[in-house]
Image (cartoon, rainbow, N blue to C red; front, side, top):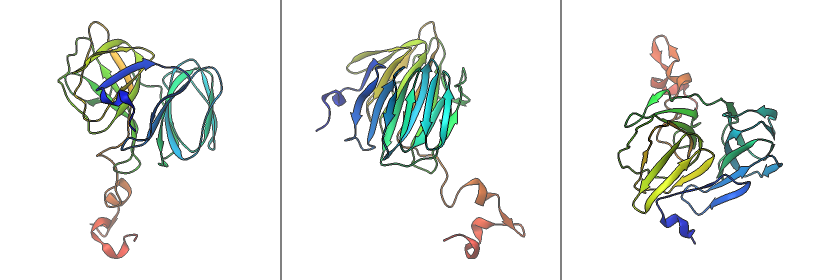
Length: 236
């Protein structure tokens, strides 16, 4: 049975160590977890999207051992162990993504969003429809247009303060706190005198490469004819 909090449009809560929200009954089964200075482990059967909010963390996984500072982020398929610092991990159950490390998150986004906000795609979907990790920047004085998303959004506030207005009332957005937006829930973000910087997990995407549309095949030509137009040589 779905958690009672899912009836809300959005919620905000402390970034505490351990499991924060169990969303395995969602259309895109996911788990939200936090870690702090103590060792924390996550199992196989998922790809884990995470970001370091504060301090220095040591990440161990099949790809190796990595020291991560504030604002660095990762995508790890399979089991991992992390200790030190403080951060958020969103695990997409039943999905195997690509290993990735990046960051630190920049001050502003590279892409135009809505109402003066900008964003960056931190971990891109490996294929169309796959999960992704994003960064959202809101300058001071933003009053977002009320809108919805077709799937959940989960993330953590890196810096700044603001508020998320919902039909159920305001949800505070404060540095170091986690927020969760439920699918199709009407909401809008607002800032006053300080900018707001957020890392956000999206469980699905309508953007990404497909077998018929990706840079390698698109930029391959045979005698001036694109490989996409030559069925005889396309991998089946």
